[in-house]
Length: 607
Image (tube, rainbow, N blue to C red):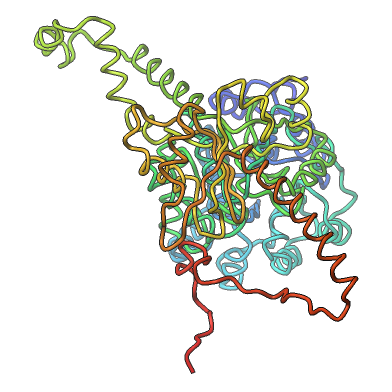
């Protein structure tokens, strides 16, 4: 790989490069910068986000700009306000050693009068969004009839956002002798049309394979039930205390709901969606860029143009419909030579989509298990302890003045007692929240097969339950009764308060009409006695051991088969005998509990 010194940049620009901390040029910079400086040929650059494209066109344009004239010499189009501001900021830093070169950003959602004022002064390089650029051209303020460079950055994104007509209008207003630089991650038909109609013998630069994921991004996925997505999200985040990432949702409504839940649960998060005003959007992005926010919840449209270099994670709360969109999302982490992780939370029916993305992106996905409560508590504890160990305490700080009093107050306690009380005080909330937390992972057929071979737990494997002294109970309430796992935990705790110690509750499996719950075998009979027959909202609970219920069911099935054979013989011998009514209705005594919660739309019996 060559160095920046060998690309033809002036000493002024090399000084700016060193000030930015750049060491070696990226592949797109290495191939693009000399071409712009020495040949003036049109360029098509197909490269993913985060490959250094801004410096690839920004450095040579700044170097070649004539600062002795006030004419606009370069127009750079970007799809969003955020990307527009980011490009302008970067180019201004490249021009730090050429202070006479003026860069102006123009975009919608901001006062156009201040932008007009800036354009009336020298505006050598203009960075703008297509809509605002056309508005300023129509007003006669932005003059692009003599520009030397036209840059289309994130061209495919501009097309996706509906700027097709705007781009053609701007292209038709520029001089034929300009140099056109088109940067895009993909090559849709309209981009091919632009190339054929508005570019002359362009040089094509491809960095990596089309749609190939970034090399330093690890791709993970978690399989959970659809209703457990949010719980899984929280556990994944809890395992990475220093997480800094974007959570992608499908709709703006879901974005708001997830962000509100995260904030309510104490996470450092906020949302970015189309309903925000520009001032609110700017505030959220400023907090995120300065790391005052750890998690930004956004849709794909709202996140376009976000250029943050140090993201540790991208989390797909929902997989996108298009595999290319996934590649774009994951490419927002693992930039500038750093590693990153792209996480997807899916259900079993989405496994085929994971396989499709693997094929398109040429990346292997790693299946991970949603962390258990014990793992999360341990991780949070160790992170807290590391923070205490690494905390700098200045001998001159105000803490030192209180140390004698503190030491005297703690003198009655041993070192172990102090540590235990200190930790208990800090982690009471976390432990209370995750107490009796259910396993969120969904078992696949291969999991059950593998676990059975190893003698581990697999669904209702009785050998495993007996080995670990666990009883599996059947309860005749389920999803149709509008209950959650936490409701079942509450019922067990409420009806078993008098037991000598608290019941340890394991995996809870919610089905439509019933549920299974694992408990300590030593308390199983007491739990059954305390709960069986109790009435909830007029509905009688049935609680049984699953193995006992299975035996009873087999016995009933045998009796039913015998009865069926007898009835069949009797029917055949008397064909005129009437059959019983097959359409028996449930009595009111058998209505489901909590059924009054969802009675909207039921027809009234009143006439």
